[in-house]
Image 1: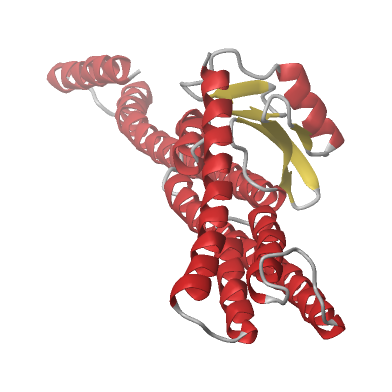
Image 2: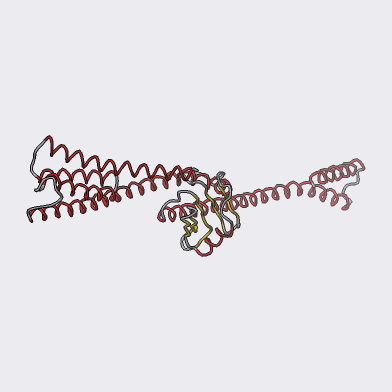
Length: 319
């Protein structure tokens, strides 16, 4: 039902454009034939201006249609014999042929300029979107957060229906919230392994590898209005760089944590060693004094034994 409505609107739009070209040709012919009497050269130039206008606004097919229509009107209303689709003078045949060729060439050149302008505008918009996308993905240093938000950023930036990001190392697919059916992991893995871009015009999908230099680290799949091949390649490179950056940041964080852990372990061992050495030294000194027989006073011996017991309790508490 929706498809039929779209097709009907396209047909109506085409009919309206053909009618507009016909009406513009008729208006020029009526104005110059009924109201303002000028020479055929002025009429031909006015028709050419109308053809250029239609080519610039609507496209080549409509301007070619107007060129043929204008040639017939020019012959019927302004070349003798007037009111007939015949030409009496051979020079007027040359003029009519020159007008028709000029109309075709002008239409073609205008259409090419219009397409180049549209292509330049499309590329400018895609570059702006790539810049916005890069601003979004390079703000996160955590790989898990980056991968979970990547598909959503792609859909919101490039106005796609769904997006999938596959990483070869983890063999996992990250999907956008709007992805209902989704692309299979096998198809994404195959593109990542082969390193080839695959487009499906019937399904309006595109799957491309994520290249980091010459190495493929995964694949990206886009459904609904996929960007151009150049933008897909740039998008894949940006994602690969962002993923590698987050992985490097996490590795650096783990390395720094391990280094700090080692420093704390060394400090703790030094502290424990010092704390253990103090009671052991006191116990050893007391035992040495008692065994040497230098202390004969019972009170002093009891004091030494109390020191041994106290330091033993402290040592046991430390352990």
